[in-house]
Image: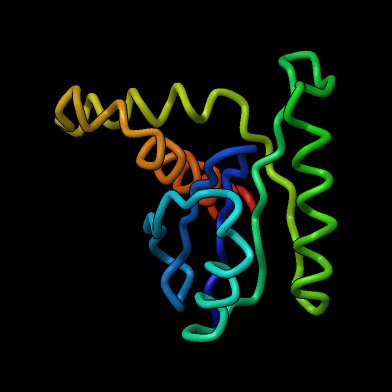
Length: 137
C-alpha cells in the first residue's frame, strides 16, 4: 500500500497530513506557506509512495460555497497538473479549524502554541484525512 496525503488548503498557509503506508494511522506533516506547497508535495512524493490526495473542501452548512471554495477548486486543478496520475478526493472540511483548536486544548497544548496558524492547519489536515479514512469504505 501507499500513503494518502491530506491537505487543508489556505490562501496563505496549508496544513498537510498523511497516513502510514498501511493506511492505519494519520500523522500531521507540517503547516507550510502555500507558495511552497508544490515543492513540499513533490518532496514528499519523491521520498514515499503516495497513492492519493484528500483535499479539504469548504462549504457552508447549507452546502453552498464559501469564500474559499473557488480557491480550493483552483488549487485542485494545479494539483492535478503537478500529479496527473494521482487521485484527488474532495472531503468536507466544515469546522475543522475550530475542531483542531478544541483537539489541541483537550491535548494540553499551551495557549501560545495553539495560536500557531501552521499548527492549526496541520491538525485540520489530520482531521480531514482521518474523517476520510474512517468513512471511505
